[in-house]
Image (cartoon, rainbow, N blue to C red; front, side, top):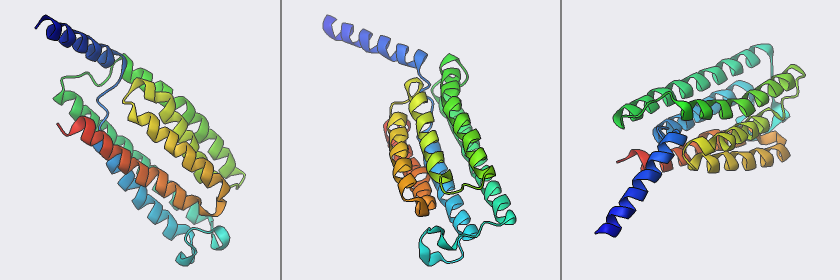
Amino acid sequence: METNKYLNDISEIKNMMNRSSRFISLSGLSGVLAGVYSLIGAWMAYKTIYSDSSDLGSYKNLVVSESSIKRLIAIAIIVILLSIATGISLSIKKAKKENENIWDASSKRLLINFAIPLATGGFFILFLIEKEIYGFVAPLTLIFYGLACVNASKYTLGDVRYLGITLIIIGLISSYFIGYGLLFWALGFGVCHIFYGFKLYLKHDKN
């Protein structure tokens, strides 16, 4: 009995330490929905910029007019805003359910470590767009977002690290197959988000 009580005390202390150092209110369902938004956005982007759907993402019939670029930017902004709003609302709901504080030292560290590589990549990609170097936009969004996930993973659930590593690998492969960036983008932001989000949901949210 004393041994069991001792082990329970150690487990409780470990849980308290994890809660104080990690943001554990991250919702897996928000990852699933972000993946769905990304797939819808990728389909809309495909319809916007490709004149022949039989090319499966090849750039040989790519038409990027000024109006197309504006529509692509609008699609990207909508997907990002929907993903952020969904993530915040579902995480707040989860935190309230578990009597956790949504804004504390761990969530601040998570946000800072996530934002640094993401902002760096964002500015770099904007420079590429300004120079009309579009081929590396999709690979670099995957790579920098993956780096942001890996960098922030030590302050949240561990599966975020594996999501980040997966996205980095997909981004590097995409940088070799330049003509199929949109498909890799859909695979990374869409399919991988759904897979890892569902995994997080089953592991942390379902019960």
